Image (cartoon, rainbow, N blue to C red; front, side, top):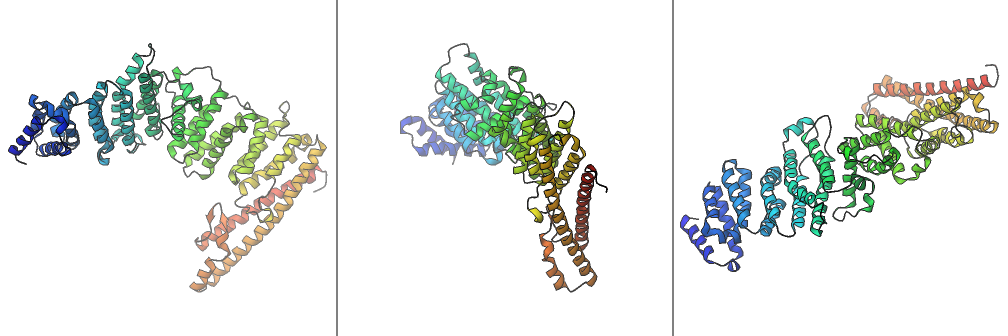
Length: 588
């Protein structure tokens, strides 16, 4: 379009009242502006916007120039000054309500490849427009913050220190800019705190709270935060935690009594994840801890935090699990050992959180999480009183379905029995009749004689060690003759079945080893080798590794290792028999 044609169009716009402008005119001014910028005439467009003769046009249709101006700022740094000045002029001339609608459209439709760049361009001007609103400012602030956070959540969260320093996708810069963006609105809420708040004040406060809760979930829940390294995201977390008390939001109210609140603008999962992150920042990172009341007991804090711990441990993301384990450990630290009553285990969170922790121990592929999880698991056991330990052990033996976890529980049971036998430390839950239900669960084989001994090796070995411990301390255990008789009955039935199981397993594995040796010696044809690969060996499971597809040498080592394990189990059984005979006074 030549210059004369443009002047002709501008003259027509000047002479046309606003109510007679057509949709084609709004599109045309956008096209003219885009063409002007693409041709390098940003200075000319700025003059057009500033020209006194064009103020009617700018006021009516100037918002259409926002999109090309923002695009030019994102793409071309050289025209920065002209474009910034042009947008500033538009914010002074155009209707604030219309400008807000245009900004929201720009945020909604922004290029996925330039999210951070676009947000950084928009924020100062969007702030100006919102501050100019005479009414419904809270609604505007809420719409803007929600739209901005929606786009921000599409950016990958840097996880390592190097990624955060590089800030390749601009998330950290956007977080810093958002803090600056929200500050005048937070100051507005604080300024009116001594006056009776208006409905508009309450609405603005609610919108800021919603933004804080959104930010706690994304990006802070995903980020690696460390108070020893004051990273950008850590400082953003500090800002969020400072905002909450600044707008008169009680941290205990958000953390402990959130179920009584009506988060009408947030779904349940969002509020749960946000408050879980809030608990982590407060109790683990100690951000804003100086504003937290000291009247709550460690047990009450643990009880309330179990909801947040359960929420974090139920997720599969490493960042969530790390925060959940850290929060669990911190919440337990100040609780006295052997103090948590059994009644707490009836609470859903006190059942679900340990179960989710158990899944971390058994299913998580990340070693350092499993190691941390095991420490927290033991710490939790240490805090339970005797009756609660008894109930927890029974629950885990019934529900874990994992030999490693069951073996760990059996080891703890043995420790409790040994502690109970000590003078002055006796308790009825691990001596006497209360011990029998535990022993019934411990001294059992899940599939009787067909139990896979290798898969269940951890539990079986710990169970045999527990039996040996009981027999060695028979003097203390025999104080109740009926209980001791029942223990002996359980022991005899268990050992009888275990002997059968060992015998069957040894015969099976020996036969397989013999067959394998014969195959290697004969070196039969390839067809026979293939047929052999689908025989009985395909069903053998050793610690979750299938023997199928192993080389003959590896298969032989696996079979040999299995036989050695059976020998070890049998030696423990024999030793238990010897102790029994010695205690009965029979010659060996």
